[in-house]
Every structure is written in structure tokens, then in C-alpha cells.
Amino acid sequence: MVMPTLKSTSETDVDRSAGRPAGAVAGLRRHAALIPFGILLLFAVIGPIVAPQPATEVVGTPSTAPSGDHWFGTDSNGFDVFSRTLTAFRLDILIAIAVTLLATVVGMAIGAIAGMYGSRGGLLGVIAGTLGRTIDLVQALPVMIGGLVIVSFFGRNEVVVSIALALVLMPFQGRLMRTEVLRTRNDGYVTAARMSGESEIRILFRHVIPNSCAPVLENASAIFGMAIIFCAGLGFLGVGIPLPTAEWGNMLADGAADAAVGRWWPALFPVLALAYSVWAASKVTTFISRRRRT
Image (cartoon, rainbow, N blue to C red):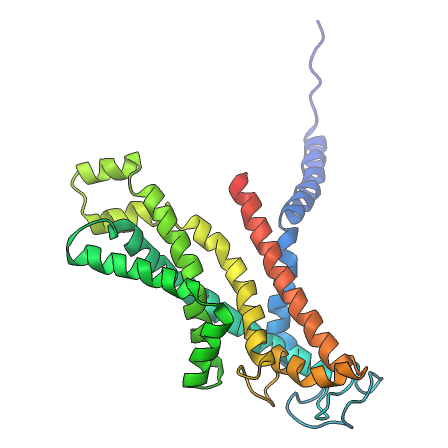
């Protein structure tokens, strides 16, 4: 008869300690997709702090090529491109976060009401149906045109741009939430809750919304990336955040003339920052999608 071999306490401790790094590495790999977005948020926090030059002051000769004094060169106004690119991280990321939160919260509220009560009669059904048609109408409008009209009426500042983009991006979240509520509202557990005497409001908040909001929250990272693109688009068209405030869109608009004659640096680096931000947001979307499938 072969007796089982017993490990000593020290050997067991060694095995456990050896397994910890492997587990830590596996956890890091699973969450690696979030690292670019974490770096993006870090830039938003420290960008204006570590910028070597004031972002809104003339610090050199206009349109100077990259050098030791100005790593990314200067633009046509004599602003330091490196400092302005770093500083713009905070403004663009804050606008994108505000747009994402507003569009998601308002879209979830409207989508939940439209999906839950849209097919019913009475005043509540009329309100829900009207909200549903409203989000369809707003989504039919091009995002840039809608944002341009709102900003033109109410002014070019951070608050107006954030609200304008939130309003025109909200239908994406609203329609997605309405679709999920329509799918969820007749599930068995909802019917059982209704038969047990729970009120419609309680059913909506306790059962329907929690089981319908996951795709909407997953889509929030896509809304974040769209907000950055459209914010820069408004700035490029000259209706976004005005100069001398550091914002990637107005930097692109200001650097377009230089780029046309071969002075590429005022436009290249804001483009790279913009592209990195959108890519980082897309990695978050991929991460959330994989977690939902597993």
C-alpha cells in the first residue's frame, strides 16, 4: 500500500506564495484593456500641472518647428503646442465625462418611461409615447448640425457645449434603454411581481430598470468617445470652445493653415491626442463586452 506524501507547512507556504504572482499577472492581463483609459484620466488630472509653458500665453516665435525649447513647436499664434496639448486633456475629458453622464442618465429615464408605458392608454401613455417619438426625432437629426444650432443660440462655452452634445447623443442611450425595457417588462419575474400586488413604480425601479440597464452602461464608453470627437468637431468648425482656451478642436482649426504649407506640428499632436482618447474609450467598450459574455 502506497502511503500519500504529506507536504510540510513550509512547502505549502512556498506553493501558495508562488501562486500569488501568477494570479496577480492573470488579473492584470484581464484588466489590461483599462490601462489606456487610466492613463487618459491621469493626463486629464496632471496635464495642466506638468505643462512647461502657459497654454494661453505667447511664449515664442509663431510657427517655430519642434526644438529643445518647444518640444512640439509653436503654433501660428506663438503658443507652445506641447503645453496646449497637455492642458487640453483636462477640458476635453471633462466635457466628455459630463456629456456621457447626462446622456446616459437622461436617456435611461426617457427610455424606461417610453418602454414601460408607451403602449398604454391615458395621460401616462400619451406622455410615454411622446417621449419615444421625441428621441426618434432627435436621433434623426445629424449630431453635428444639432450641436451647432444649440451652440449658436446659447454661446460657446464648456457648459453649453456639454449640454448640447448630451442632448444630441441622448437618443442613442434612450432608444437602447427603451428596447431593453420592452424586452424585459413581460418577463416571468415581472409578471410574478405584478401578480403579487407590487406597484408599477416599484416594478419599474426594482425589476425592470436593473435588468435593462447593462447594455446602456456598456454603451456609455462609446458615447464618451463620440463626445470627444464631436466636441473637437465643433471646435474645428469654429463654433466650439474659442481661442485662446486650449482645446483640441480649436487647435486643429488653427493649425490647418500651417499644415497646408508643410508646418505639420500644430495639427499633428492634437490629432494624436484625440486619436488616443477615442482608442482608450474603445478599449473600455471591448473590456465590458468581454466581461458580459463570460
